[in-house]
Amino acid sequence: MRKAPLTVCVVGGGFTGAAVAICCLSRLDRPFHLVVVEPSTSLGRGVAYGAHHPLHLLNVRTRDLSVRASQPGDFLNWAFRQLDQGENHAGLHDGLAHTFLPRQLFGEYVRERFFEAVEGRGDLELKIVKAVATSCVKEGDRFALRFDRAETLQADVVLLATAYGLLSSTPTGALAPFDPLPPERINGANTMALIGAGFGVTLAAQSQAEVLFPGVVYKPIVEEDAWVQVELAWRPTSEDAAVGRFVAFMRDEARSRRLL
Ligand SMILES: Cc1cc2nc3c(=O)[nH]c(=O)nc-3n(C[C@H](O)[C@H](O)[C@H](O)COP(=O)(O)OP(=O)(O)OC[C@H]3O[C@@H](n4cnc5c(N)ncnc54)[C@H](O)[C@@H]3O)c2cc1C
Image (cartoon, rainbow, N blue to C red; front, side):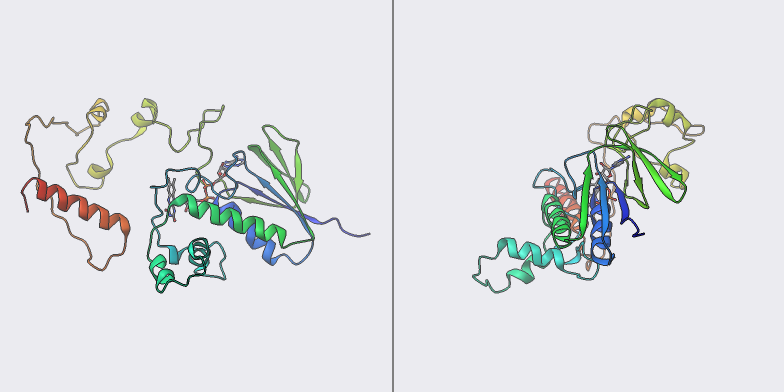
């Protein structure tokens, strides 16, 4: 009797889900069913590379990103093809390599590569389940997956790519990554991070003063012209955009206050 094709189920359709699916599509050398479970419409984009403001930039240079493990520089080449009108502008490719492009664009690239990989496999059956996976239980030598709004599914292989979890709290009360912390969670903490790390003193927002920790006192900064000396040290060879922007911001601030 011919064995039924393998069913591979990827739960979570962000960057990791897309990358692992692309990997299966390029490496599994027999027909298989691929199921991707993703409740949002942002398949391949996930939390980081969805519909953000175009000014939300990647924190990694274009040249250093690729969803294809065997092809470093793939994102750079993809981005170059979006811009190049065949005019062969000298240096455009090299210039682009050093940029920090909008995160949205990276999401578009990942999504495109995912669907290209799917199209490249004539022997594949793809199913996208637009739902939240609520449980995954081993039944014999397969897995049974249950969803909030879809039929139960049996799979041979389940790959969890759910990262930070869902963007909003679940009905069971699980905390989503961007939810505000409720007081009972805060009260469970036993000190503040920098004080616990031995720094002895830290700046805190006024709202934090509601939370009392043994041995910690809050002192308001009342002077209008309160100031604190900040020493800034960084490696001049650092290519990190965040460092560059922070140093530029501090320099501008210092100049505007005539401190430099
Ligand atoms: C605002 C922001 C900006 C970032 N910028 C960068 C950057 O510039 N460069 C960089 O390298 N990294 C960046 N990161 C880190 C980034 O998150 C990771 O690089 C990567 O995108 C994580 O991908 P992921 O697939 O693991 O997670 P996610 O993108 O979170 O994808 C997980 C997916 O799983 C789905 N999911 C969760 N639970 C379930 C469930 N029960 N059932 C079904 N689906 C489920 C979610 O809907 C989601 O789409 C950033 C992160 C954030 C939050």
